[in-house]
Length: 134
Image (cartoon, rainbow, N blue to C red):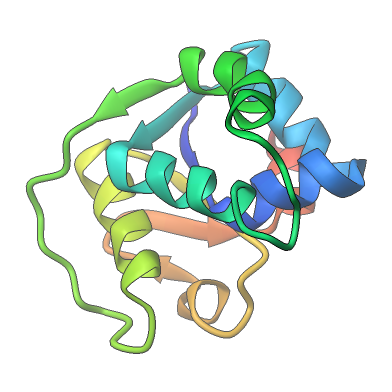
């Protein structure tokens, strides 16, 4: 089965705008692939959702993330990766994918992650490309 990390930008887009990112999230919830998460990625998703930009309460954040988080396989990365000096959060995504033995990272981050194309054995692709694979 495919193993993949879903970047925070896909989660936020899916929750607030639907479309292809939401279809990726639904596939994770339906266990059509093995969705890999780590504590740093969960913390980043929760931090973004709690920001003033979205105005969600703690209960609302829990409501929209609980099933998504529960259906994931949690890994504890031991690698320390600094491939993207500009963004520590992107390095946490790479660590999760590498230590979670993922084939894919699904992201909309064209500047940093998608521009890599591949990191070690992990392909970095868009949500649309990921859905075509499934």
